[in-house]
Image 1: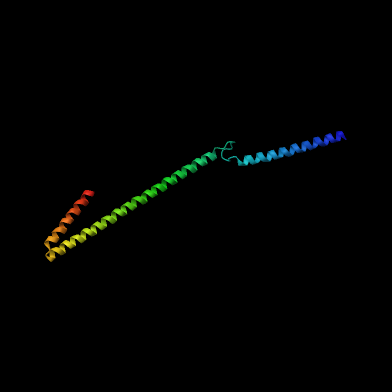
Image 2 (image 1 turned 180 degrees about the horizontal axis):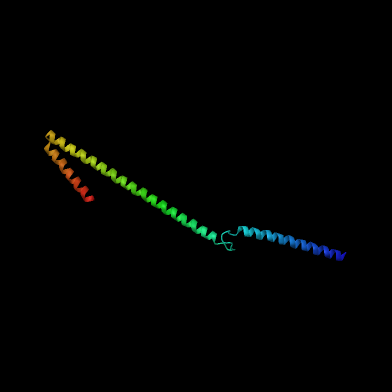
Length: 129
């Protein structure tokens, strides 16, 4: 029995070794599947490249967003200046009408004051430019 027992133990050990080798082969096959198909290298650098590309894309997106934000701010500034110019034009137009009405009514002193105010406003506008 001891010889038969030894043979059984050897056969079991052989089976166990084959079984464990089979597991190793399966694991190594899985590793090969996990390897990059482009470079077939163990320490795949494609992931590093992918991370760099993603970082570059994120940086480009941030730059584009900043550019869009700046464009919005510039447009807001232009709109504000345009509204201010329209308002000033309206005020000047109303003052001119007032001066003409005062002249027509015979209030020369009041018309003169409005004319002086118009001159000061126009002078200040020219200086701001």
